[in-house]
Length: 176
Image 1: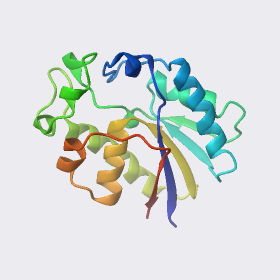
Image 2: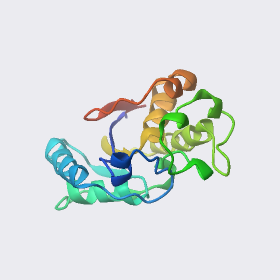
Image 3: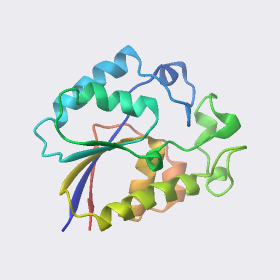
Image 4: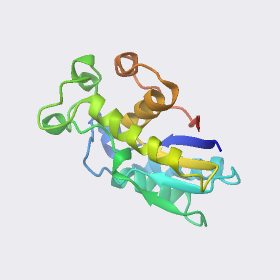
């Protein structure tokens, strides 16, 4: 049985608005982000979602709580859906973080993009072993998206990291 996986990133944070990379810090949605979370909830209501998996970082959890305040589907937090750990570079402008030099070399006191993507791959492999649901929502970060693209679609990591991330209203995947 195939699992249809709908992916959404957490919504705009105060750090996003300041131009700071949050990494593994909790983060907090801005006023714009809280409005966007409401829009995500309206967009995904009656979408056949049977369960929601979210990163355990506060900004992703806040996005889910606002979007699905009255939802009756189960919500699961999973640390494997976290953003890349930028270590000592957390809090800087995100531009320099989007370089291929950190595909295999971890950020100082952090992790590499490959390590972050492998975490997400571990999550998707675990989903493949479960057949309880047919349509899931996953809420995460740029690293989550890159991990899904790499582990499900087989997209090479190099172009995923070299290309600037473009936000959109969700992505859809099939996990066989």
